[in-house]
Image (cartoon, rainbow over all chains, first blue to last red; front, side):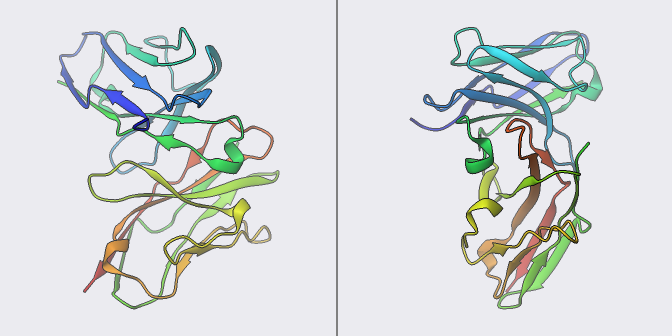
Length: 115
Length: 110
């Protein structure tokens, strides 16, 4: 197990296009999280899954954003009709149930640039 | 709603000097607090968590509920400590989202 993997590492897209990112968590982790980080800011929570169930979504997650984790393993985050304000680093993390005790393990992130 | 504040975006010290990275939080209940670190070109990783009262790489952090602070300290800074440091909070009963501060970029000069 090589930790949390994210693909692609970088994505440049034109405004209005759709993009999809993938995250593969640590295999025994049942929780998976998506965060967004813009320049000079800390990561901001977007959504999280426990197994295949999406349990919480931030108000930051507009209707153009959708996340799935169909089999409780990998997850995808799709952004439709991208806007320049979507340019950011998208981070995935995974954890065991007891987050408070152990914290997250983060992936390297996908850097999105919308031109 | 919970909030984490790191008042210093940049902090520069000399090697061997003590260092303290400040973190203040606002939350009405009992939070769980963490420090995460990101070294250059590496992923964000957990440094320490208050619940374990541990010392990692010489760093310690004490939760002060009266002052709602969780400052990170190290008595003698090393050049390899140069990194971005984030303080983060999760509600004790939630176990889901982490709320991060904006981060402090620590530079340890030779």
